[in-house]
Image 1 (spheres, one colour):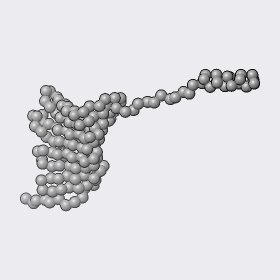
Image 2 (cartoon, one colour):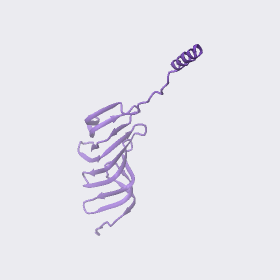
Image 3 (cartoon, one colour):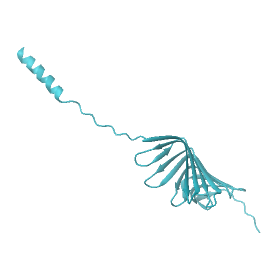
Image 4 (spheres, helix red, strand yellow):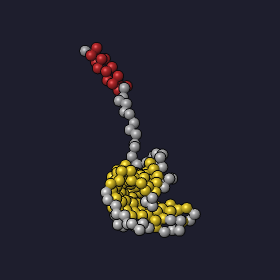
Length: 173
């Protein structure tokens, strides 16, 4: 009986000496959440870009997520509204300095009265370029152009559709 008591106590002591180690859980969610954000980017005391978003998540690596959509306005040097961009949701990749809009993405060129629609669009602010490999629709004043893939200036003033299709009317002089 004494032997069983010693074995029992030794087993309890060994079990108590080895606590169960748990791996720490690394948090990968947003560090900050902003609601009803309105931000202005300026150069030489002139507004260049106005940004609005209902919700913004900021992450440790500098990335930002806009899960409820984003709306951007781009202005000329003179301060005139040049173009707009909106998307159902967006993501900013800090390391690449690149944006991705998804869902119903719409870009309007105010001066040319043209509108681009697609499901996914990338924007490189440093190059002032937008691009996609997805299906695109461009509504012009008289025509509608369809295609897959697009490379364009961010204001949609100049663009190339990789694989265009559809009919476009031409006027002869």
